[in-house]
Length: 327
Ligand code: AQP
Image 1: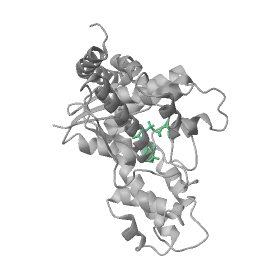
Image 2: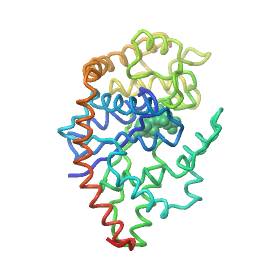
Image 3: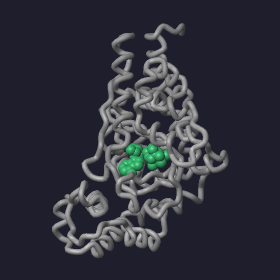
Image 4: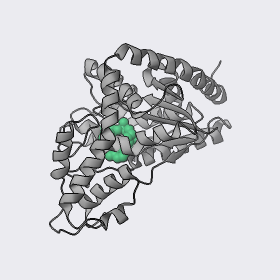
């Protein structure tokens, strides 16, 4: 059976982009594949975090993954820092990737140039090497991610191929799985930018745990344009196209055919808000139950780490042997 691996950072509140771009596919794929999912807390450290907030966000994110339907009986669900093989393999990856390759990563350029950034950590620069380690440690075939992660999966493939050609067959070379709809959910106020959780509270981001009334308001105020025609045209009408993309991803319908059903922006906004609220309703209800028992979530994560570690440890041993380290 093919193996699937993906991770998500506990770096802020989960938003609609995370859900449509990644998590709904994790949930789907776990029924057909051997699946490994990870809350990548070490990645969150690339930007400065408050210790208590990081701890509570890690548990909360795991509870959200469970609420979305990740089933710990079907998938391995764990926290990255509980499996020490991740940072260990990351060093081998850092020595296999070049400075030039890391310099070309758009995520690094974006985050290091953000307004107000005073401190750019070395980890922010090298984290694609840690991400490559995360993926390669599980002999992963497919990585379900949003479109923004395409470049990181590409660099992982390059690292795996380089390592294999230098030191002999060691790693499975993974492929990304990017969904046909919802792969890049845009900010409702700035449709040229993807929704992002490290931006914090923002009128353009719809959070999975947000109050339905607030969600409705955010969609009502979504930026469109001065025309009134509903048409799917990402270049000329990014705001309207983004709403059609969201509605398409939630309903499973094609955004272009959805466009033909609307003559005005108002009803499109109302229907999109309603579809999103309905999709989130059961997730919010399940999360409220899980939130009552953080100790149980922590227990499930430990069980997950105990299942992940033997797989990771075998692959790490293979890599260490092939590169010439003493066992
Ligand atoms: N807007 C999005 N549309 C579709 N998919 C998205 N993903 C993220 N944003 C969108 C996918 O969600 C998964 C988890 O990614 P992440 O933990 O990096 O989430 P994030 O929101 O991208 O986090 P940050 O900390 O805010 O990072 P930046 O600032 O880079 O956006 C991934 O599969 C991702 O593709």
